[in-house]
Image (cartoon, rainbow, N blue to C red; front, side):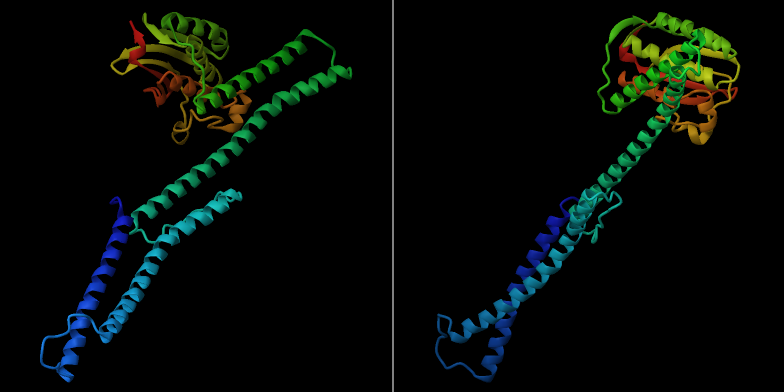
Length: 356
């Protein structure tokens, strides 16, 4: 689309009015005096140098006609300009009143600037509507995730207070497990929210990535063994400038995700360095993610099968936490199917932050 199309339209319209006025006056005078001289020949002698009364009257008539034409052209141009602007104003009032579905109509798209204004307004309105819908979905998901552990805690504590349950180590461990789950959920929510607002604090330091990965795997080894997963760790000595706690947290989230959803078998945790940077990968033996779900696997509260995910205890935030941490390191996350049909989750970090 050409720029300054509206200014061109105004310039062309004003030029057309000026040309029409000049032509009308010139042609009108020529025709009038040709007819006048044909009917009433002028007296002999030189013509008068100054205009006479009929000349002033004729000039006023032609100017009035030009004014009418100019007003007509100006009204048509103003209507073409004001139609989309009025639509934007009306839609803005509807948006302020809470109608997030309001959209403006561009009208005549030959006026480039007003059409772009309407398009930009509609894009803004669409993003506002999507943000509001996402916030409602986010709040509903948070409420759902918090409801289950809080209900369990309330029931157990009320049972203890009423003497229904006898205090025991097993009951206390159950309550502590629910509290730990709530703590993890709150921390995951905090990380994802801070990442979305680009306020996630990072503490960069030089670390031995191989040692950090080994510690994360060792911490999860009992849970992995309980899930029937055997670990194969493939690393190399790499010194990385990053937030050690966050990187370890991301790897733990990937391992926890494998514990919940991967079928028993080999779980390979590897690290490789190439021209693009460093890649940390976790590969399982299946069953893999559905194709329609893989594109939104790293979104908050995303679940391929809600019922199965809730039975396994997942909140739907683990992979979104991984993405938040990777992006805070100016990296990215990815997912792909392995040759055996399993899942490969990857954290890619930029090459400028490491040395081997």
